[in-house]
Image (tube, rainbow, N blue to C red; front, side):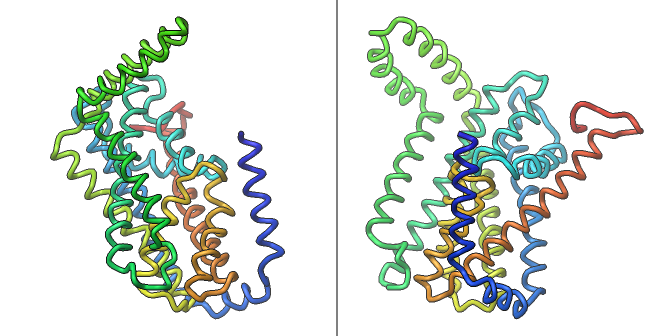
Length: 327
């Protein structure tokens, strides 16, 4: 699977290498406005802080007690480790390892991470659906077509179902009964299912957040989405692209979902391919799309650099190497 992800990223990059004009790309880079790019890069540094505070509030009141500063550092470090890990799941895996290493609560944190991701996707889908419906008559927005809105609706329904599983004990029982009956025909599978179902149900019960926490989580999700959008918007401004505010907003919503797909490393190749499809529809060049993707990836490298610094500071305290980052 890991080799497959490497192969996908490499194949897409090779295809893009021959597809675009590097002379035009370099010309676009020379004509860009560095001030806009620097601002977008500075805004990108806020992402791990928002995500760290989000997890800090979600963990409050659970058996996993971590300080806000610790969770912020973990999110910077997770970006450092996840540069060469699959998109979407890479950071989640590193975050899970850093928070629960040598401690209890592994399943709880895993379920909490699932709940957070699904809730986040729900917020993205709602925003995308609402914006696309309002601007549905704009012919430039091919990604507000009936087909895409249908896909978004299905994703929306799935995320709601998962959240109901976390929030309602009766819904968990409703899911459990038919699956238990199906697996009962294979004893060893049924035994495994019963054990996993019990553990997952208990973790879901502990993970279930109250309305106040749910509101705080949604606010942090909105802030993170805004940061993501601002990054792409000012990259577009830096390259002097003729893309409207609303168009860029919808592009960024699509890119959030694309970058969560675990089919490449840090979204390399897949992100640029998605940008080419959308930018061409909006009247922009392939070179501008690829350059936008490269500039966005540079943000990731800057964040990873901060993560490396936090990792070194956590390992070497008072001259002694430590096995974990300091809390």
